[in-house]
Length: 156
Ligand SMILES: [Ca+2]
Ligand SMILES: [Ca+2]
Image (cartoon, rainbow, N blue to C red; front, side, top):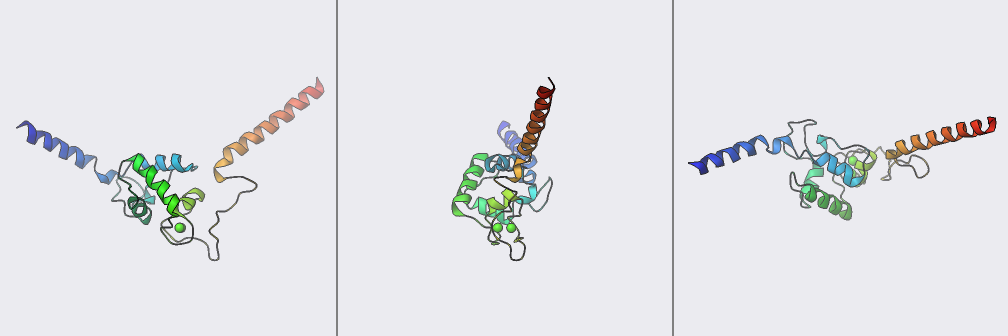
């Protein structure tokens, strides 16, 4: 009697935790692995933007699954991302690689480059990346602090 009961519990647990919840650690893992300024939304891989989401059925997830991605397995995700980078995967065929699109805020599932656009990410000034707003703010604060320190020294 114990074995069928255990099987029933396992089935119930699998149903509750099933793929409808998506792979919750994935957005943060993608952000960390690629150094993105924000975590991608559920819509990167799923049709629905918020939980409960359906199957991972977007071109990006198909490309990742073709490279060994297993739902819920962060290690397989990181491996798949590395392989996508190595393969230069462009799931939507718009000329920009999936991982580049993620990095500069494009949509790897839709050919969304502006007409006549290039595959180069937009630039934000000399050696500046979009995720560096925080360091720019820190540099500005340091400059202001240095100015105040100079004025104080000049008075004293
Ligand atoms: Ca693309
Ligand atoms: Ca695109």
